[in-house]
Length: 531
Ligand SMILES: NC(=O)c1ccc[n+]([C@@H]2O[C@H](COP(=O)([O-])OP(=O)(O)OC[C@H]3O[C@@H](n4cnc5c(N)ncnc54)[C@H](O)[C@@H]3O)[C@@H](O)[C@H]2O)c1
Ligand SMILES: O=C(O)CC[C@@H](O)C(=O)O
Image (cartoon, rainbow, N blue to C red; front, side, top):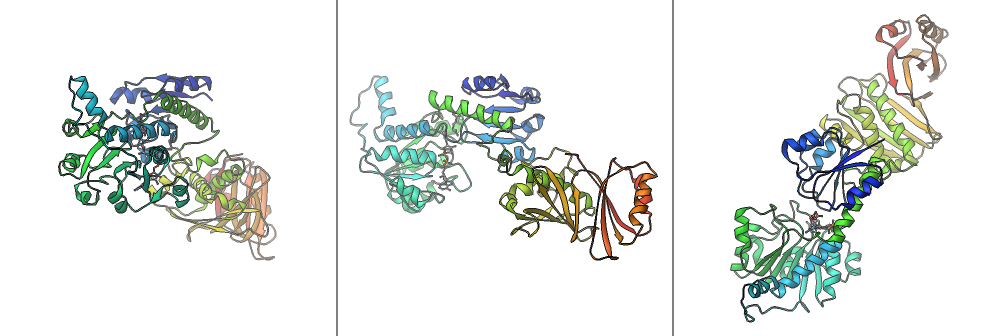
């Protein structure tokens, strides 16, 4: 299969080179926006962005062919992941390609703040000489507070420790072991604010981190401390930055990132304060980082398009498993069973229970996605895949229950779907024999064995002689061949379930003679793709 990728932002050329080497057609156009972008994007399977292009629901809608959006970098604030997920589009980033560069930039900002480097450089360049004014402070023996001890935060910790700083951090998700191995003491946020001489943030911008420092909690800060933000604009409340300095809470502020980039006029005004030093989002702007992220994203996207691996995917927890050989047969089984379930369910049914037993239980999450794909493909006009199946299930108000059980006595693995009360059949179980022999093995407690493929007539009947003969002659009269059949009954002469596979897709008209046979009840017709 051939794929086409559009590189939209200023991503290193290595990106195109890798795509070309991987046999993927690649076009670079980083000046597109508005209608031009909507028109151009239509035919591409993948797009690569940095932070200039906003991948909005409208862009995603216009990109009819899109399968993957790649961010050459970490932050995906410019990509509407929810909208991408709803459209079944994979979003991936390169989580560690620019870690070192950003950590180094942060360390540079800390030192530049401590020694007034940008301000004094400007002074000299403008013909001035004021050594007293630019008296600095050592970082040695000072405390560096790190909020967010992830990849960049950890690299900053290692480097600034070598400068003789004591490192303390706040990160509710970091393990104590990890902090200890870095020689970092974990504190609560308010404790950290009270002891940090320098505070640097390395978290995403979230509801929790937005405005983490503002005039509202300025009293908690150690007087005369320094603030650094090389993560995301808005973690320090921008409107309060000048006041924090003027009222003596903060001695200096270093910013690489802003709530709007480039900053608005009002923000530019605030940034003019002499104790605020600024860089234009340069954390990841090194040749090394840009080459790494460009190369990584191209390989990751090529692998994803070729369904080889899904490294770096942010919304494809399930899809990343589809390259796992062990899970593949179960995925197919689950999807087929989902398709059977919806064909047997009552109209408007919205309650389904999925039960997994045996070794497939460890894949329960992704198997549920696959069952939902099977169910929803009958109802949703857009294409349903493992990325968007849960989104559509939620949107359609499906109530799902998932349970796992220990191994059954009879089968190594079993997937069971329980249907709504109003359905003719309430519970249907299936398994896979070998690699690709998918079979229904139980319906409502009746043991049955029928391949999950093709066209299947299912009915309940009284277990009496001649029933099958009547059905087969009703089919023979219409020149319809039986491919396979399976009978399940409780006790001799009681109720039975019969499943008949036929060689053609039958119309309602053709089913009528069987439906009208005396003793045939609850006739249902199920149609599945042939393997
Ligand atoms: N300036 C740049 O050019 C540049 C470059 C790369 C990354 N970044 C940004 O830097 C930030 C960190 O990147 P990273 O690669 O280290 O990410 P990461 O995911 O490795 O680390 C983020 C850390 O933040 C922690 N965290 C999340 N919510 C928190 C909260 N409420 N309080 C405290 N800690 C919290 C997480 O537990 C995690 O350890 C991101 O915002 C990223 O977009 C900026
Ligand atoms: O220079 C860039 O692409 C931004 C890098 C950075 O903010 C990121 O999140 O990776």
